[in-house]
Image 1 (cartoon, rainbow, N blue to C red):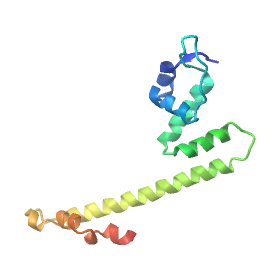
Image 2 (spheres, rainbow, N blue to C red; image 1 turned 30 degrees about the vertical axis):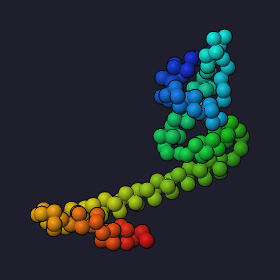
Image 3 (cartoon, rainbow, N blue to C red; image 1 turned 30 degrees about the horizontal axis):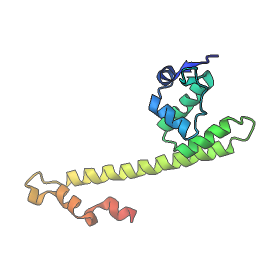
Image 4 (cartoon, helix red, strand yellow; image 1 turned 180 degrees about the horizontal axis):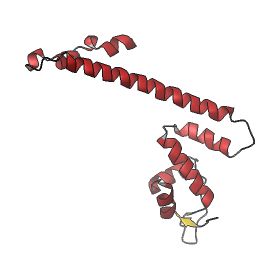
Length: 143
């Protein structure tokens, strides 16, 4: 088990930048590490695993509070995983909603371009739709 790892080494190994590691300590996602005689932070392999967990969760789009809850659950491995499942399910719903929104946006942009006459700006459908939000079909569907 690795111990007494300096912050730069932990940052490189975990893929988490040094200021972000300090921030995670500040907000309580990472416990404050012991310090060397020179007051340098010294981390262990458990800290490295925790930082990797946080980085991966952030990459998947989990909010800080969800990660805080997931870390607390991870620290108590004997309990039910129902709460972790609920957090992941909520994140999946957010992603699905975002995908639906992006697909609607794609369709609207394709429609605007298809209706464009490639003539003058005065007759440009792209400009018309952007100038009048009521012309936007995505807007009409989401109201």
